[in-house]
Length: 394
Image 1 (tube, rainbow, N blue to C red):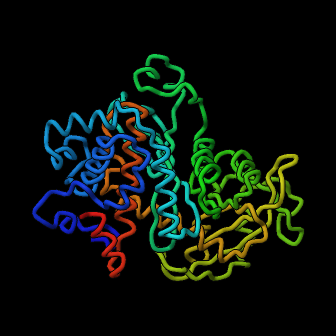
Image 2 (cartoon, rainbow, N blue to C red):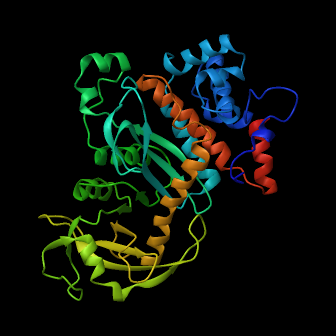
Image 3 (cartoon, rainbow, N blue to C red):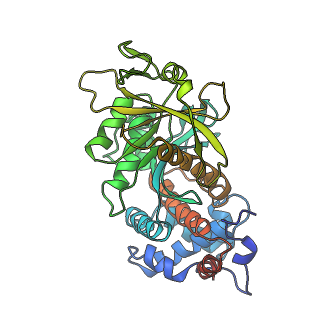
């Protein structure tokens, strides 16, 4: 069992079922729910996400809270009630940043495979983890991250044109009128900016761990918001070498991989600072520009090698061309921490398990799944954290 995940046995300690995990935390996060019955349902749903075995369906969650009657109430609470999830997410972000003190925010995609076609946003879409087009939902999450742990605080569902352009599907899924078509790049960018631009959370670097196709469209809004950006770059992305001392200067726009392969001799070791990646990797950096007029300030293209003599294992673009390379590489590793936590904790608390069809229901489930993730992620074997975890599950 991962030490960061609250033990299911510990959650079930005592003679009674768990119905009120983390009373003080719930009071803080669910303060925006005006009715006592809504606050009760939120606690019951959270308890089920933490303790129910198997898929975190409403039926399995309700089995811990009273069976058929609870199932109907919880279904209404998630799918048909009127409560707004945004204040809960903002309160969660505030709590997580106070407890965790994140080193960076990480935005990465979450692909949810689906067999049918009725769940909101389902379409044939590119699944980043699989590297192919698959039927399912594509979402982006914003995570507060340190080398030791991470927790999601914001989600945005990518809505394909097949949903936004179909009035019947929009109506059935209760998609808001304000929802407009956007590319995956725009969806990822909006995920970060709706959190960092509107909430009272600390400004930290933004690590964008996604397959970006329009670098200019991604870099620009973060530069305008004055948020340091570190984004993954495709090997084929074309950039202009801005350092006259480097190979390729005056060669025009060339693929990022070619730029980094030409400076392999400049690679230097970078020590890991903890987290899921251990040991030393090699890194090199080149100052570059985007290949378009008025492309803005210089950027830093970073290549990372896990073994000598091979092509770069990863390419990143930093919006500050003057930041220390070692520090930037260590920040990129937070994306691996998030990926690991998503699988080891997110899967346990049902981040992919919502079975409903509505836009609002999906967001409410993801909000409470994020709270459940935070409860698990912020628990470890130290006395202080262990006491904290037991309080949440008492």
